Length: 226
Image (cartoon, rainbow, N blue to C red; front, side, top):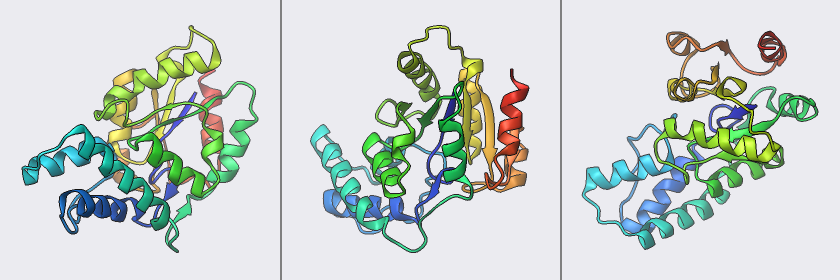
């Protein structure tokens, strides 16, 4: 079961998410450039919003949070149309390859809310590859998403025997590696986003690649687990 992170792993949005979050903070809280100093790498959307609210002593309600995310997703779809947004090297070919493999299933494990994940991946024509996943709607704590993704993989495949060691979590930050470790999954890291190759190496993922321009290292790693 390949569980993919989105930002910095599958795609680079050209900071579309950052600008969309700023637009939502302006519309809902009247704050301009509210997230200018925030590092979103490996974080969940609720974690980021909660940090802003704590830093600024903002009063929230379910209605305000709902409006925040509605404005965010609407702005995100617009902001993704920028020249710095792209699918990461080799991702289209890698997903197409594993999508046809009879013993591989593709899912998501992401800090994005579902609507944000869908907006980003639909923009690049990648959403249809992922029939299940765990999202920030499920929990604002990234390390709690692994067990949720595991259960959804079981339901999707109709197999209760799928175990944590059948999962491979793929991401671009140390947070993704920690998330894999928390559920007992294998950790694959790619230096295409939020951390350098050496920074990722210090966290000792099971496989570290510079990108997926060549999918063979990932294929070989999967074969080694059988």
